[in-house]
Amino acid sequence: MSSTTAGLLFIASLILALAATHRPLGDYMYRVYTGTRHLAAERVIYRLIGVRPDAEQRWSGYARSVLAFSAISILFLYAFQRLQDKLILSLGFPPVTDHIAWNTAVSFVTNTNWQAYSGESTMGHLVQMAGLAVQNFVSASVGIAVAIALVRGFARSRTDELGNFWVDLVRGTVRVLLPIAFAGALILVAGGLVQNFTGPHEITTLTGGTQNMTGGPVAGQEVIKELGNNGGGFYNTNSAHPFENATNWTNWFEILLILLIPIALPRTFGRMVGDRRQGYAIVAIMGVLAFTGIAVLTALEIAHGGTVPQAVGAAMEGKEVRFGVPDSATFAASTTLTSTGAVNSFHDSFTALGGMVAMVNMMLGEVAPGGAGAGLYGMLVLAVITVFVAGLMVGRTPEYLGKKIGAREIKLASLYFLVTPALVLTGTALAMGSPEQRAGMLNSGPHGFSEVLYAFTSASNNNGSAFAGITVNTPWYDTALGLCMAFGRFLPIVLVLALAGSLARQAPVPASAGTLPTHRPQFVGMVIGVTVILVALTFLPALALGPLAEGLL
Image (cartoon, rainbow, N blue to C red; front, side, top):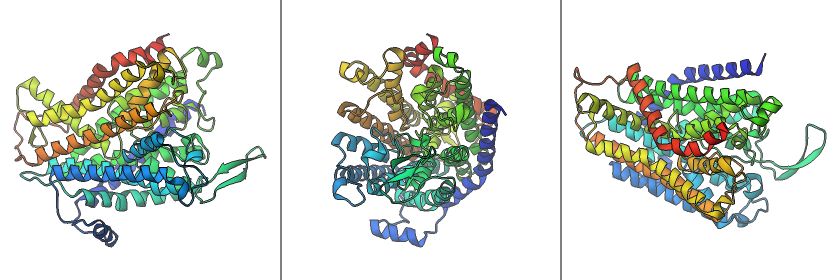
């Protein structure tokens, strides 16, 4: 069997698995977030944090809770790293430097998991488990909670209440992420991943020699980083390391975990708004964009354009021979289409146009299918913009799911879309305008520019992957990228919650003969078109200076 055929079967089996889990997982999350019964363990948590679980919040209260929880999490994780040498299970590592501690704290709390350090030589077990891995869970749960709040805004009418953030956070963690992560960790351990509490120890290599390696709770951290669309890794080589991704089938399983929740959430959305067809339309939009991104990236890597790949007959630099070109490209596309950022190959070594596709996947706004929760609320904002554009074309007041899209709603949606491009382009311009920051580029010319553009695209979209050639472990880059991660996460969240509050206060508008059907293929095509056009108009000049210029040389 050729590698191309094997790659096609790999993708086809993933699609079948996602189709099989879409309905049951989506229905389960619908029951989780609409149920009124609290589990005993959840009630204990509510008492400990002083929350009344049956009290609901307005959008402003919901937003304050998200921001307060995240701010406290950043402070705690920062202090945890700075005090590492005084904690147990530190493995003798010194305190993390201030600028790396800031960058890492913001990175993991924003569900970005950008790592400007080597995990196995910087963090002890306690910081990895009780700090970073905990944020792998709760930061993903925050994203899902915000998405659910926006869906409630569409589903409810004549009310200021969007639910209770603390209840949504706890339920998402306890009932969704933890059970799936536990089962997934067992599967990955069975596949050869490490899960222990040992320090540096000597292991026998496949060649019969020995080397010193640091064991650790890798399997558990690996499964939640994929499931929660976190990225990051215990080892610097990430999911290319055999302790984090042992075989071809664990590679397949990790991609499944990456896509599992984002693909199932549209089903939850359809159930909550009372029209499952709306959920099918949203997942169809995600599916078309995702399949296109995966197919184009895989095709470009298989074609191995460029002087050196053509000379040697394949684009295998930076790729694991265990996975080959097609499976590495599928993993890269899956992580950049979501906010995962995990890698099983070096994106910096991809072909020029293949690397561009990875960037474009992120520039879409992480909506195809996007991160845990973030993908759904980003796609719904794009649907609102599409409905508004369609309304202007026919001279009608735009409506979506029985809610009018007026001046306030479209302003919030437009600001949501503008946040990330502003951060990406401003950050890239500042870095390229400074000789000191340009010195961090491994390559000159278009590829060096691509390294910087990729870094700010990844940080601002809360992805976490990188073109590894660039040196970002400096005070300037750690600070600048940390700010991009924070603003790229929390400004859109506040805008989404404000939009949800505005929608929830409205009275439902009955459908009429002039109402745009938003469950048909026509609407699916319109949203895809609006998404692609907006991204092209915003980022094409920057792409022309980097990967496009390199690919045409």
